[in-house]
Image (cartoon, rainbow, N blue to C red; front, side, top):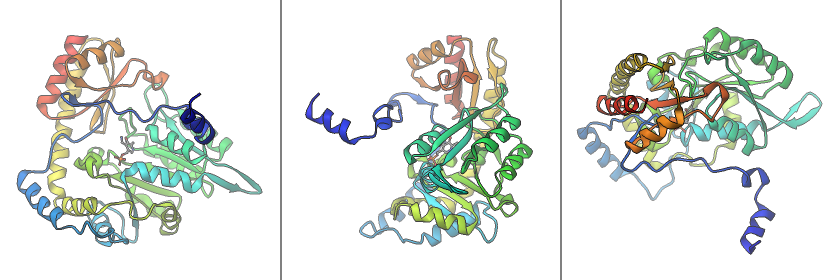
Length: 367
Ligand code: PMP
């Protein structure tokens, strides 16, 4: 082995050495329908105004440490209940990692142990990755064939493993469906005083349904959201709401100044123009309905219900479809190898009418 290989073997954790890094395919020249981005920019006049604000931002200074103005705009504009604050993250990815780190080692009764972090699977990949990196154990509980929660299995797994954190994405990624709200409440109640339920509402701008208003009912509930899917994936801003005493604990793990000055300025600006982003979400929801109807009419294709800005579907041969779409310069996500319930499933982001039509045309040709 070379000196650098020895160094790596002697220093880098084995579980890190043995995994591949989070893979994002190069998308230049492609119609990019693999990452649930909003295809629309802000209108030109707003972009010009934002440009001026960004030019005026004090890049020589650290961000204002309290993020008071940004937090106030989030709470007022995005439905955070009165009396609740938010914790900010560099994307909700960072909030997931902060929570996993904060719970990773757990004193449960007399026992000190690696904490268990749980989610129904298939799930957003960062739930298990963050658990692993934090040194906690991840337990996935398979959903049913229709992607709904297997409530008895979830409750049994909670009883058995006493998870410190349970992630429930609402709607779920990569499947797109909303779990039954009563099932979710049963899980939150079962966790009681030994586990925190994280309802991940990354796709709330499209689903419109939310647990945010129910925070006062459940002290062990936190609700996580992001500006990414709303149209600001590039600025990386996630927020988490929940009981102030609980957020205070997560706050200790948050890296200082994790939300940078440019993000702060851009987010505050966008929050003053939420109606623009909301109307883009409306357009995407209308396109989701059109795309779902056209897909459902294709022979051999099974379309799953979605409340998000993407649609999951089963095709006769996902590898072939993805390869052919790629040759037509359309990037989608092949879910086939992720989980056995997703055999021959693919996921496509809802985009502009033109891009959706290009996808449909390429898909039809590939079937
Ligand atoms: N949660 C879910 C369910 C997601 O699908 C994603 C992004 N794909 C995220 C969280 C992370 O979003 P971000 O870091 O951009 O806020």
